[in-house]
Image (cartoon, rainbow, N blue to C red; front, side):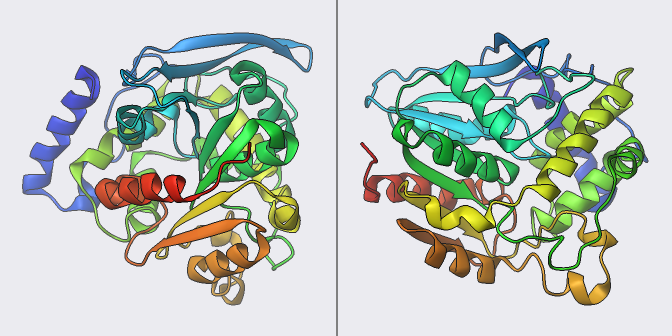
Length: 341
C-alpha cells in the first residue's frame, strides 16, 4: 500500500473508532483528483500504452509486474465499473508470488486512462484495445464485474490467446432491459454521475459489495472514485462514465455463453445483488433480478467448459471482502482447469 493510501487508511481507521461505518466521512470530505486520477498512487509503476482509436490519440494506463520466480504464465486482470487496476492490489501480489507475470490495465474511460470527448464504447472496442497492448501471447484472463463481461468478449474474439478465464461476479449474465428494467438515456446517466459523492458511493458499496459490513481498508477505494468527481475534470469523467453505463446496459453477454469454449472458473459471492439501473425498476422487477445464486447455476450450465466456486456469505467483491478465501479458490481453481493451448 503506497503512502497516500496508507494515509487514507489510517485516517478512516481512526474515524471508525468513533463513528458508525456508514458515516466514516462527512457529506463529501476527501481529496480531489484529476480526470485521469492524478494524485492517486498505484501499487506498482504505471506505464502508458499510446494508440489511436476511432481517429483519436489516446493512452491506456497499466501495470506490468514480473515475478521473481516465473511459472511461464501471464495473467491479465480486468477491473469492474467502479474499480480500477489498483483495486487488484492483493490479487496482483498473490499471482506474482505464484509465478505469474501480471498485467493490470485501466480501460479507456477509467481511472488513469484517457477520457475521450467522443467515443463509441463497446466491449468489442475495449477488447481490441486490450489485445493491442497485451499482444498475441497466451494469457489467463481474470475479470471482475464489468471486467467479467469484457473478459468473456475478449475470449470470444481471441480464443487462441486466451488460455483460461476466471470470472469474479461478472455482470451481463441476464438481460435487464428484457426483464423489465427501464432504459436510461446517456443524458440521464450523466446527470446521475454528476450527482454522485462519497456518501452515495460508500452506501452502495457497503450494501452490494460487502453485504452490509464495512472496514476502513475499503475507504481508499471510495475516495478513489469520489476524488475524480471532486476534481476540475468531473464533467469529463461523468460523460465517459455515462456512455460506459449505456454500453453495459445494452450489451449483455448472456446470449453468447454457449459459444465460449475457453476453460472458465466462476467465482461467485452469492450475496451479490448487482443489476444495472435496478433502482429505476419497478419493485416486482427488482425482486427478480441480480439473484447471483441462480445466475451462477444458470451460467455454469450454459458454459461448455466451466467450474464454479461459490462464497455463500460474500457479496459483489469477494476478492476484497475475504482475500484469503478468494485467492486460495482462485489459485486452486486455475490449477484444476485445463489450459486452452
